[in-house]
Each structure stands twice: as C-alpha cells, then as structure tokens.
Length: 160
Image 1 (tube, rainbow, N blue to C red):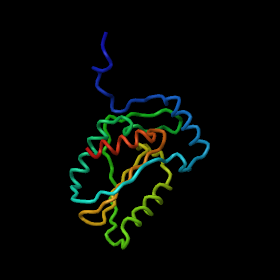
Image 2: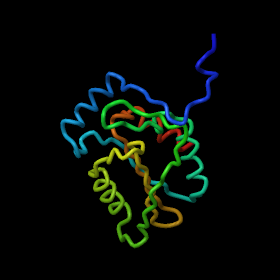
Image 3: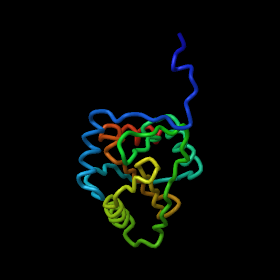
C-alpha cells in the first residue's frame, strides 16, 4: 500500500478547515472587513543588514511552513499552495525625524487594514528602512492561519 508521503504535492491541494479555523472563519464572515482577527508582531533591527539574505530567509521560511502557503476560500475550506513567492513590502522611512515613533505609527495603521481574501495567503510582512543600520520589521497574519505562539515561532525562525 502506497504512502501519501511518497506522493508529490499537487500544485494546489484543497483542505477542510479545522474546527478552530471554522470558528474563526464564521467570526470573520459575521464581521466582513473587520481587522479584529489580525495578529502580528514587530521589532527593530539595529546594525548591519543584508536585504538579499533577509529575502532569501523569508522564501525559505515560506517553503518550509505550510501555514504560510494556505489560502482561505470564501465558501469555506482552504487551498494549500505547493509554492508561493513570498512578498516583502519595503517602506522607505529615511525622512522620519523620530524613526522609532514613525515605525510604530506605520505598524499600527497597517494592522488596521483588513485582509482581502483575494487568493493569496492571509499574511503580510513589511520592512521599514530608516538607514543602513536601522530597520523595522512587522509581520501580520489573519488568525485563520496563525496564533500568537506561531507568530513568535515564525519571528524566531526567520531570525536564525
């Protein structure tokens, strides 16, 4: 009898929502456009920074973590993408006089934007650049794919 582990992953695998995901999905459906299910974290990178290496680490992290390749379907259920080109939003904050305050303000405003559920995984990462040695990073997820513990694990994994 063949093992499903030996079967190559289809380009898109349709999966049901878990019980916890169903509850979150119903909550989101009751409040369309709401951001109350957005979660995330942010931090500062103080020191030398290699953007190419950072992007490479993001691509590797997305390839290793199925949760970052899940796309929720409007009718319920989800699709697991075999691959996903991980976007990283780059924001120039070099003109900010108070860079840390400006970054916090930008993060808070961005957290208030609802996920579109447009066929892409419901997460977003942004890198705010103030100078060659001061950056801010924010990661945001819809609670359908990530919880607080998972968010901290993703930040730790990306930093390795």
